[in-house]
Length: 484
Ligand SMILES: [Zn+2]
Image (cartoon, rainbow, N blue to C red; front, side, top):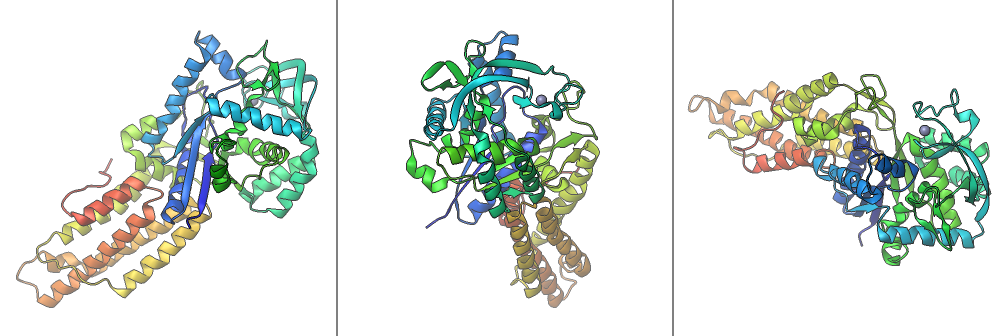
């Protein structure tokens, strides 16, 4: 029996085009999905778009557009990332999909039946940028530190509330018993601390008369759901919950990948909601850092937003995947610069794997070359690095896994340089038979290692892996990563 593995990214809010930080998130999730697929697991990989809420409603109004038509345009842009970045997701959920709307309503009813939803007067400071309530202690000079250009808004109306406070102890017990629930552990300690300080019930509806763009609250058509309440349910409506019980039971609980700004929503609010609805909590939450550009936060006003589509257009999909996975610590903030991108490209891709493949297939194409049995030394080294690489990927250490794969590439380069197989293989008739056999042995060993490297690189650089495999079959054809 195959084991099942479910992984989902966050569902990006469709109020802007995708930026490089989100590209990092889906590439990381894609590596995990591909790795487990290669291990023989049945993987379901979900992505999608979060399409309700005040911010989107206003953006569409500003542009004089029908709100759904506005969402269609941006959802399509996010869906285009699949091809541009070669992402292997199996499903793209939109929170405006009919079956998602019904799932969110069913989820609401379950929380309500459990006594966790009640109505009260709501007066709060609100950041539309975050679509979150803000306490005074979270504000800097009266503004949201993430959105200093936006005014904090006061909302006062009668709303439905979720009894978040009832889950404080349950969440703390859960964290205590599941120390690897959030990766890295520093983020688990952060959410623990937040929970220890007390949880306040949060509003989960809006008056429809003021803001109609949301899922209707079941049994009360004067209200729509608060966008986070409906969006979080997207992780299970993607599995066609509650209609497809078998699929849900086969794949849930799942793993979620999210940015550090999503820590509270994913690892706390959503988990409390699942407990309330009587459903299993998520399996694990992996939290990645943010990407800055040349030391500054990326923003439209600074004009330093890095567009993943442009980057792919210019340098190719795997160059972008490689840079994001190799250069950044997977769980910390990192800085993007074109100089570093170009340096990595030239040294590791054009110079490293590109050069090794080119010189090896050139030697293997010589008429004097004869394929020999693989030597024990190279086999051992390849096995050691394959095991190391797999372990690092299972620990989400993408950068270290790639470093380890490149250790095998360097090993092969040194091996060729030491034995100089070109000397015996390029001088027909002059060299003794023994010399040719030895030279052929060296080249055969490196061909074997390249096959292993192709295998190692598959989750991170799928196209490169494929190209290496093809050129090993037909040594006359392919060039990897021409120099910039
Ligand atoms: Zn904000």
